[in-house]
Image (tube, one colour):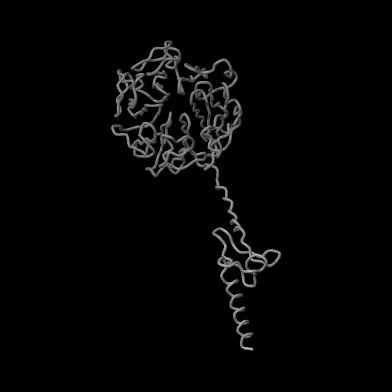
Length: 393
């Protein structure tokens, strides 16, 4: 009797060891055929867990991967309250009522001013600056003027994404930015420029680059300013147009293709009310409604039956705002926006003939169309758009 009882006790102990040493839940049998495998117990290797098979045997199976939660799409809304637009070659910026600046598009030079060099397909706010009253963009550069008339720039010319104050300016009322140079118009009618000068784009009579602003020779009564890739123009108080810098495509309007190191006056237009300067082109509108363009612009498909208020050229495209606050475009790829109404401002950008354009609408939003390789249309994609799309933030 004693031997039988002892056998029963031993059997119970072995059974407990067989089930308890594994990852198997209580009540499982361990091993193959319900028999414990000597020396191995029922412990499962890393990455697997014990489970019950059809024969009620503890077996090891792969852990079920936890389902990943789908990322919620980033909430976007229309960029609103815009009071001014500025377009570079592959990026765009907007100034809103509060004095804040938002930018989007290409950012390898830090031209979006958000502290990174990451491309943005929707508008992001420029790192905190004093209240801004004006913005300008060109090439891979952006500049802004504060309420106290101080000027800040970021991007290629400034060496990165952080805004740098331009020293040596006073009484600034307007900015213009090119590929490697920038200019400022003072309340006195003078114009000062700084940056690269290999095509005499600073207008100081030399070809020497300048870190600090230098005065453009021959300009004393400027009332409007426009800056292209490597040339600049002003509208004077007398209603004339004077330009300087690169002139390989005849963009200075002086009937030559000779670069000019000082400002020269165009003989072709008088009584001008607006000028528009693109990468390699210049346009002007006269008070009588007549207008003209010089440089690398398409001219054979220009409209002849509408009154244009301001004209904005690029290499293969031109867009203009009409007296009825509509957009008309001609050239190779921006025609899809013609007829867009409620427009308060039109701006164009271009990189090697690949153009895009944006319009500031009467409701404070922004609509863009054309090339979108770097997200410069601000709609959250990089898809080219023949028709205008609304910029998001």
